[in-house]
Length: 225
Image (tube, rainbow, N blue to C red; front, top):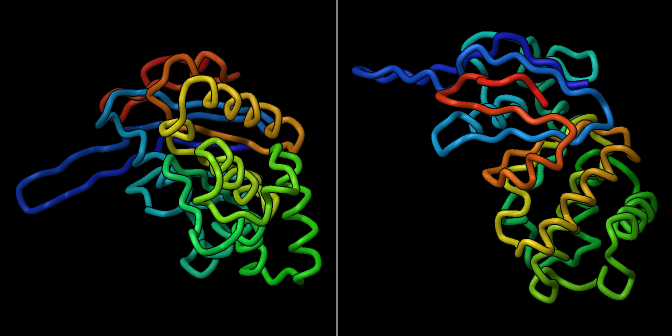
């Protein structure tokens, strides 16, 4: 469960103050694929950064899996990002000189999981997202965009996170491939009992989500649908 209460983020300079996130409150249960939509500058990316503990809010509360993230010290936030959060990016962010399998193994290595277990879980995850064994030892340059995003999704799932944050996960994909990826995220949210929250500008994707939030000028402007 993701729970956000009255979240605020203010950026200040000597002569200017911008409220990028303005009193946002929302909830997303476990096993649900949800989206945030809004125009450029509406606060979507800032909100995602706050939820992923990449930035700290000015005020408000973020709770993931019963833990209050906004009370954590920096040392605990590192562990939180490693163990509780998975990230999926528009540009995939795969390491080019590593194979698909090795890319998925990286988060588990940082978590101190043995090599045997890392390999087994990475193979299982890549099978789960539909990347067959013949492609698991290829480097990203030898995979299509859709295949690279499948690797990125498998990597996000590596440490069994409670929350996956996706930033325009279909932004670099054609519409047909994008639909396949969204369907996959829906299915994975349910099967892995993981909360998935995706930022998107694509209303078609938002309509496929179980819950959709709309941001305008940093504020939530509609009830989730």
